[in-house]
Length: 237
Image (cartoon, rainbow, N blue to C red):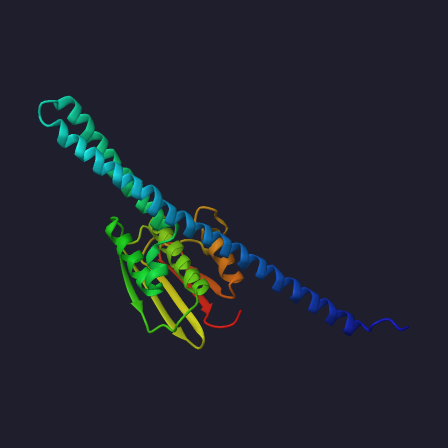
């Protein structure tokens, strides 16, 4: 029996490598899905479980403070201090819940979630985030989540490292792709260094986009601002 020719052996090797790559991406997407499902579960538990309990506790403390009246000022002051602590903890819990998985993404979709993200970043004392969102086709949960995480990570990176005064997030659909750009007028960076630095999170974002069949590009130079370019396919596996 004759040995396979070199071209046939080469093609078989290519086919095996492509099959391994497809399997690697499938496993990677499965891991990401498990992570997002766990984020969703934890976010709901924080909001509906811990958050509800804190709300009830705050209400009961308020009733106790009212019952004490003005005759027991020291005890009333302690109750008011406990109410303040409860209020702050409740707000921290809600904030953590939204960071894990904002309910608006599941309830109202990507565009509403991006508008909430931009508004919350601006209201937190950061630079103004302007949005330009074109008409978007219907997308499944995985693609909406991928684009939202890309926007979230890029905005966080701009807020932490860029020292930007303004940020523009642009999202359009064109030629079966969703195209997203996040531009800032900050201090810029060395793209190669930013992508290998664990502090920026952009390297992880690039890998997550690759697993989802998308692409990532970082355009920047010191003193010239930064542009993050993201593409996600609107169809296919």
